[in-house]
Image (cartoon, rainbow, N blue to C red; front, side, top):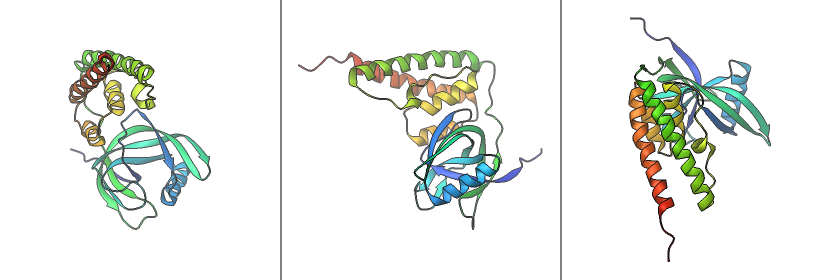
Length: 218
């Protein structure tokens, strides 16, 4: 059996999780990450994103979780010394080791194969897409009643695509702790992702429907 190739990549440790095929806006303002961005834009425009396990997002060192996702810079703008990026998730990777003596964080990684999926996942994904549409409509109702402004990832529609697309986009938009999203990123199959997401999304939908049904005080 051929072992996966190991490559060295820049690594952005964040308090968020990026899923393959999804989009993520980022702000880059630290000198070390500005240097990383310059090199990335001069190269293949990609770097790794991994959730922080120990440490801080800004300033000091951080130890990431083992599984992350390669990000490709699709859009970039600079304002007042701050770079605003829109990146798209690509391939998952496993961190083999963190590299030392570099001007910005780098890691040796090996890329992972796409999460396994089967034809039986498709009807489950269609049902989850419908559940997600109901959830988004409920959030819009709640916004009108309560005056909330939701983050775009909560109310964005799922793009056209099959079970893998649904699994990744629902995972990206779930209002759950980052560690729960990390567990979804580390799932070995689309089937497992869909099962977990259905339960989480159903619970969120029921919560907001209950809020909207609650009688006014007095």
